[in-house]
Length: 476
Image (cartoon, rainbow, N blue to C red; front, side, top):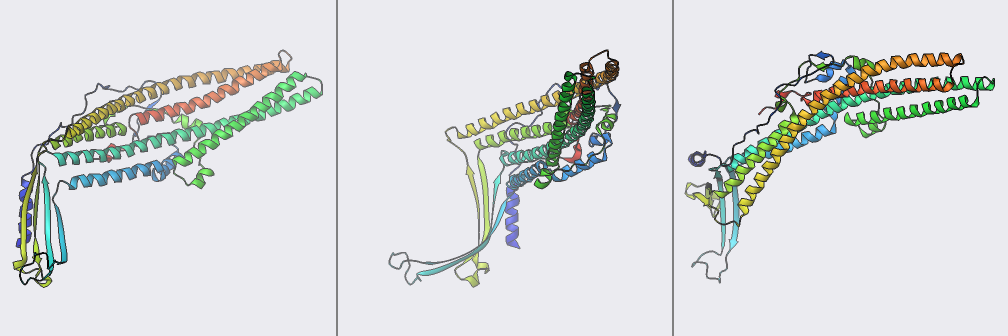
């Protein structure tokens, strides 16, 4: 009991010597001029749950796909592994701030030369030695080298946690955009198939008219060309659907066999999804504390700042305390006898005198890394507000394009109807009918693509303001 108290009192005394101020700069967030308010103009506005923004589209299939991706996506699993690695490094850095205690048990048997003159008269040439004890060592953190290392490791752990959240928010937005693109491709395929059916019926009609002599060979070949072009459009639309299905299967983290033969469920069609589209009524202005990529960049900057203090601490003396207590005996049965007790207490103070500029080089390197981390942080903030700006501009532009295309569809339907009527009455050529049909099909295709682009822009806006995660999920 007395031996244990002795060791503990030695450790406590060592700890009491610590507590001096850490060298190096304390972290301060860079001062940046950022917008005080983010304005949403145009379009339908609605109150939005930014944590689960995808629920605003009222599509249960989309919700199921996001939940599946959250469980199985390989990028998320990779990011989780990096968090565990950073956590282990943080635990290791923190442990250096505490004493290390080791238990030892050793035994040796040595034979000394009888002719070397090292043995006393009558001494046995063969000797034994047994030792049992506890040793403890502790480096006093006078200058904050260990605390700065702990600070840096914690910041890098937080950075990895925010990096995983960045992967998560990107995954959810990419999955939603891919799903919207798939439903748009489904609509494009249905439109291409309907157009192909119409072109086939036109060709059949022209073949009959040509056979009866009611039309010329030019109209027949034009109908054949249009039918073939429509067939090409169907093949292209099927390819787009197939490629999107495999891309979504990868995002969902499905097996290689499931990626090779993807089966993706469908929910609302593109028109129904578009009907649920709305811009958030109020955008969170505190993007600096919502965007996980910005928070990750800041934690990297915190770590780089702490590295400077850790490097500068090498200029100053380091003090390591050691202590030990135990037993030693040449006979094993007497090892724990009170008369076999031994102990030691030591201190080692080291002051660097000449390192040929090595310490200064390490400090300069740490300061350079902080400069890089600061630039990366500023770039992350710049990128965030650019994302917000571009997403808002894209949403507003696509809404205007959609409205204009609706007007074009209505006008071209009337044009096609009049062209067909003129052709039947002999007032125009078949080419006029084909041109009207081509123009209408092109605008209907553009209308679907505009719906997809508008949906994608709104998703980009949710991502740009840091939607898709609970901000309180990572606590410091």
